[in-house]
Length: 373
Image (tube, rainbow, N blue to C red):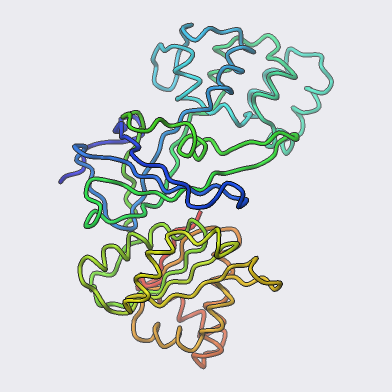
């Protein structure tokens, strides 16, 4: 199959055919296994690729924005980026980001206002960054701005990228995703991530209404030689691409060395795809090291297991193993990188400078690959 020319401006309308929770609702997290039907699309992906999703805003939030702006769903506005006349419901549901509050909008609203709070907010960039658009509009209004002015000042809805958790060798014309519902609190109000809420709660099942396109990730794929050992570090939903990796390796009868470091809160509630990993392990296809941070008094994370297995880890690297990391960029990926350098020093008989040079060469050889976000 050849990939069609799908993009942000021309997405394929796919269909969610399965949405299964991977942990109980009382576990403190909402993680879903989502199966998307791409039959007939011509989309062909490799393991390690990402799927781009174009979400819709939550209907309740859209209605609040329309109400504040005095709009009916069928009122017509200009999508200035597309130079297109569209219904208000289309514009605020699918084309504009109605969560963040742009500084330009706050400043414009403040220009014609005598509200001291609004004037003060407009001078505080950090406070503007933390503003919720709906709360801002409800509290401060839009001054002399028109609904079209507000639409012009809002940012466009951008795609979100999700690591594909499957191999076409096994699932055919489907894409599997592992999605965690994003949660935060703003001004005491619980909020969900726009795209994760759309995928986990709002997007209809069995209807071709999910706008998607392929986002290839050429820098995060399996070695060409199927016998090359691989080491995978993927806590939480970072596990996703490695499910695809192992599906492909298993289907292509690669019984060489595969090592997975996985972790989350608890083994009982947060061991995603556990039956699959345990089955591979029992067949001798996968070396498995698990870190569940809340199952004991002392917190244990994947980087601790790397250090505990440092000698064997260095042996694998010296055999030419590829080292993959997927997941949180701000903390986990940095801690894993530090642990990698440390085990090379402690068990590879390298100085700190030599360990840095070794890791640098791994990157240059494309043996140290990361998909972090």
